[in-house]
Each structure stands twice: as C-alpha cells, then as structure tokens.
Amino acid sequence: MHVLFAFIITPLAAFASLLYLENTNEFLLNLFITIGLAGLGLLIGVGTTKISRLFFKWKTHYIRSNLNYIKGESGQNLQFLGDGR
Image 1 (cartoon, rainbow, N blue to C red):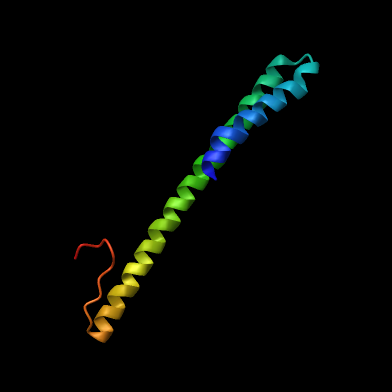
Image 2: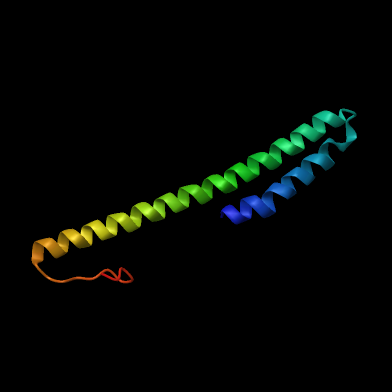
C-alpha cells in the first residue's frame, strides 16, 4: 500500500494538479500546490510503512510473550518457529 502511494499516486496527483492549474497565470501557486501534493503523498506512503512495521513488531512480541506464558504454565518445551532457542 505504501509503495502504491509513494510511487504511483503521488506523481499522478502532482501531474494532474499541474495540468488542471495550467490554465491560470499563477505559476508559483501551481508549483507550490504540486510540491505540496507530492509531499503529502510521500508522507502518507512513509507513514503507512512505519505503522505497518510497528504493528508487525507488536504482533511478533505479543505472540512470543504468549508462547513463553504457555511454556511456563504447562511445562512443555514449545519452540517458536525461527526463534532458535
């Protein structure tokens, strides 16, 4: 999703705004709006990347802590796949 925002939607939005505002005479306004839309798209792309990574870290930690709890309660020797312990 973040790749879609950062590399596809952002340039399309910037190009569309430039084409839409081409008829007006305020070139600097058009330029600032285009840069602003591109920056907003990149911000959304980076934000979704960070949120998804944080969620994945939280989910992994939650699963591992639950497995440690189960291991301690039942006395079995459960292993988390890829944990290496």
